Length: 273
Image: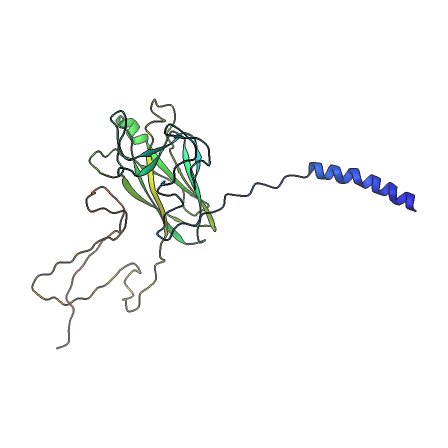
């Protein structure tokens, strides 16, 4: 009996070793989703933390820039005058990424499934080109997984602006973790495909409040509509609407971010005598 047990063990040992040798490796864990700051800025969303390794202005290494995963030709630049006479439309001292042709910058963020979000960022051009290339140069924004399709933002050269254009990209989250990707979809067959890519800066994200019906509103009013009553103190009154959005600058007339205002009406109310 003891001899049979020893033979059985000898037969099982090689099989166990073989099974261990061919066992498939566990898949690599996905990148851990980052939690943004209280004001919505992504981890290193303003690119204040410099890359660990660089070759002149080119970032070397996929994970060299803290908080971001890079692919392709990505440069780490500062706003203001540049060598060679160029001027980057960003505040002096503010850091930004320049994405070459087919290059991208991505970050995993923690979101709430089903919630709507606004992804805000600043983008601008870095050199002037002809009309054909001007129309072809875009900044692609994608969030996955989400219920919103990727889209392209047209980036223009605005020499009269003191800062980059501010954009807001809306999406609805599908899962707890989302991958935010900014890329330059321009083909690399242009002479300046690597050097004329868009600048990316000031990346932030905020959850949008769900539209909720307000108490006391007529049934004909949309949830996003508002009604304000006031008592006039004279024959004329000034009605003012203002935006407190942090990307909007009073001295910059090209920033498209901010609330949309429409159908403003002022009408008297019947009062009891």
